[in-house]
Length: 128
Image (cartoon, rainbow, N blue to C red):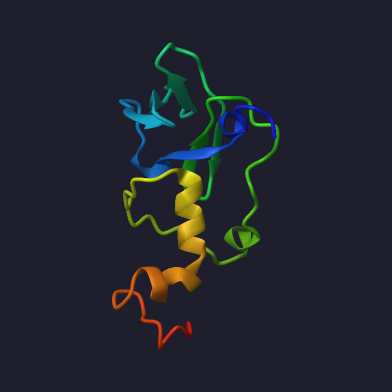
């Protein structure tokens, strides 16, 4: 595995619907970054040292990277189906790495064991 491989991945850094020319400050992997729209409506993401970071707008989110992504953002073919729409319902903050969050939310089989009586229970583990 390449050292610092995570640096070259895409990460969601904000919702496009919440971005304007005044911008907003946030952090990516602990590094302060700023997101803003320029006067032409283009998205800019800058590091704290003023470096412009790569930007991708997809699935209603602004994605960026501290490195140089070598591949495109993962596809979600269903998102491009006719009649699909993005519903912006806000943000749910979870204090963990982005990859851990994806793993946890995709692995619903752990719910009855880890979140007993909140999201299921061992005798009733079937997901319906």
